[in-house]
Image (cartoon, rainbow, N blue to C red; front, side, top):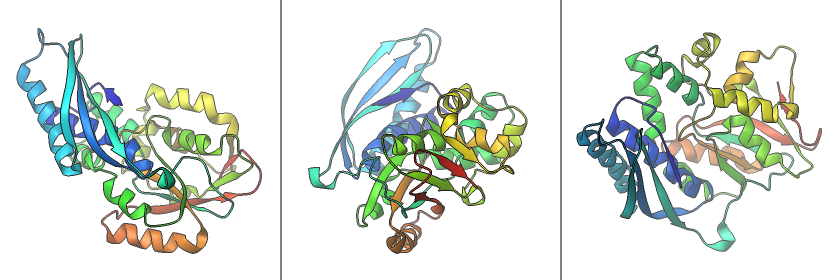
Amino acid sequence: MDFFTPIVDDPYGFGQIAAANALSDIYAMGGEPKTALNLVAFPSAQMDIKILRAVLEGGLDIMKEAGVALIGGHSIQDKELKYGLSVTGFVHPRHIIQNTGLKPGDQLILTKPIGTGIINTAIKRGAASPEIIDVVTRLMTTLNRDAASVMTAHPVSACTDITGFGLLGHLAEMLSNTSIGIRLESKAIPIIPETIEFARNGFIPGGAFKNKAFRSSLLSPAPHIDSVLIDILFDPQTSGGLLMGIGKDSAGDLLENLKTAGVTEATIIGEVVSKPAGKIMIA
């Protein structure tokens, strides 16, 4: 279950993004979403009901794309608009993919570029161009369905979707209670255009600083790593991509099949190492 306040001005686009975001957890576990309930908070005294209709249409269109049946929902009066879904999916118990289980030598594949939190902050402050708004909206409304479909046909060790904890926060979860470490190649990490510029100009959401305060002790960045990049790596994502770990011998096939399936921005961003345990090194 997931819902939040609008992050783009277009109500239809907001509905699409919220629905895609809610479906993502099912895909990350190798499952197939089947049914959903709408979750709505709406200030009917201050906002035209047409806005809510557009939000719901956006969400419904994403559900149709995903093959998900809308079976009901719940709405309340609130001071601000909120929308999301409660989703039910199916997966065979033996085929569940968890966010733990990485092994030394595993290659880490990320399927979408990061930076949505920073771009969305720039949108709220009126600083983002129509072009970058289109780019980030396309990313956030793109389902992780195709990536998940390819993933389940390969021997993936672990997977998570990159959302509110940011890339580093979700990596930290994957390291929890393990004896492994992570080495990231900073130049390989895909970042949405203009994100670095916006970050340097202070368009960093508060959630990035909270993520950083909670997990920064796990980091071991090389001396040349810019602090702005660290902020971007902690940037909370909305409807972000999947992060998969897979053995080196299988990583090339997985990456090639992802790109063939249309997941063209999938990239190997690092690998799992045996030591130092519990640390995320950034080179």
